[in-house]
Structures are given as C-alpha cells and as structure tokens.
Amino acid sequence: MNFSDYQHISFARRGKVLEITLNRPEQLNAFNSGLHAEMARVFIDANNDPESEVIVLTGAGRAFSAGGDLEAVKAGFDDPAAFRVTAREGKQIVFSQLDCEKPIIAKVNGPAIGLGCSIALFCDVIFAADTAKFADPHVNVGLVAGDGGAIIWPQLIGYARAKEYLLTGDALTATEAERIGLINHTVPAAELDERVNQFADRLAAGAAQAIRWTKVSVNIGLKQLAHSIMDTCMSYEWLASKSDDHREAVNAMLAKRKPTFTGR
Image (cartoon, rainbow, N blue to C red; front, side, top):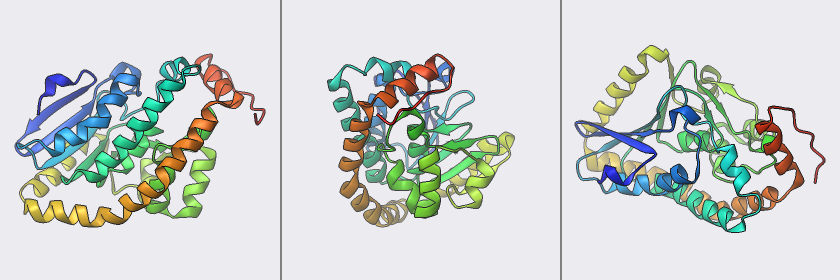
C-alpha cells in the first residue's frame, strides 16, 4: 500500500494491524473534497494491503470527524458537477467499507458527526471514548441523511429510535450510544488506545480467513439493503441540497447564528 498517495489520511502499522487516521485535526477532520475522495478509495487499498489483517479507523486530534466541511459545502451551491462527484464517492465509501474483507474497528476518540458518524457506524466493531458524541444532523443543515445514515441507524437501534435521532439531529453521548446498541463499547478516554489495541491484536492473532469470511457473510444482507436504497437516498439529498433551507442553514452556521427555515 502506497501511503504517499494520501494527503489527508495518515497511516501506522503495528504488526498485522493497520491504523488509518483522518488527518485534518485543525478542522476536526471535517470532509473537504480531498479527504472525501481519499476515503472513497482507502478501504479498497487497505483490503488489498498484503501486510495487514485488521484495520483500525480513527481521527487525529480531539475529534473523530465533524462531518462535512461547511466551506466546501458552500462552494458547491452553484456547481451541480460537485454534487455528482460527492454522490459517487459517497456510495464508494459505504460500499468499500462493506466490501472490505478485513475487520474494521472504529476508534472513536471524539465527536463523530454526520458523514463521520456514518463511517464509524459502518465499521464492524465500534469503541468510543467516554467523551465522544454521535449525531447525524443532516436535517439541521437542510439535507437528507443520504450518505449512509438512513441505512445503518435503523439496523443498529431499530426504526423508531433511528427516526427520532435522524429527524432531529440530536446527539448521543457515547454512554447512551452503547446503552441502546448503536456502538459496542464505551471506555475511559485514557484507556481507548489500549482497549482497541487489545481487541485488534486478538483478531490479528485469529484465523484470518475464517474471520474475513464471517464478516463477508454477515454483511451480505446489509450490502443488499445498501444497494437497494442508496441511490434513492442520494437523490433525495441532491434535491434537498437545492433548497433555500439548505443554503440558509449553511450560511447561518458559518455566521454563527440560528437559521430561519421556511420549508422551501
């Protein structure tokens, strides 16, 4: 795997464990076009990496990922081609995670918001620091949770709870996320690295082919579901991206004021 091909993601090896780090810490690892494009191919490259059997995904600094970079979102207001690229890459991110045969462990070191939350939840096992939060607030910026949230939340916590959180954008603490089954484990922040390393090492020492093919088998139904609704989700998100409410929400957030929605 050629790590030098990546500008917004960093890598570290520890035996058969490959740690992938979203590396825009000053922007809370928010997704600009560069990071988004790299995420669309990193799991493919990691799956083909001959030196690793387990993947750990985390964020640099104090966040896992704050979701979409608002400046990048605003730049795409009047550029239809930009959303087409984003939609294509968004599907590639989800499907490459699901297609990756190696187990992916999310090490959620801080807030996981929007797309950052979806990516964490599509991982196979999720560990979070007790200071972390989870939210998919697409609706709060006038958008549809089309990049994966509408797929994965109901599978983890059921439709009623999923709709409550997706329709409001409300955040959950890591403790609450573990309690309702959204994530696997909440641990003290100071112990997060050690706990994830222990679990990753356990998988790395296991029967690699059996572990890989068990993941593949479990993911069959989830992949079928994702393929059946992802295009529709992205289409609705594209429609929402053309709304006055979306523009108002982004401009309001950049100006640090409360948005005024009109339903248009």
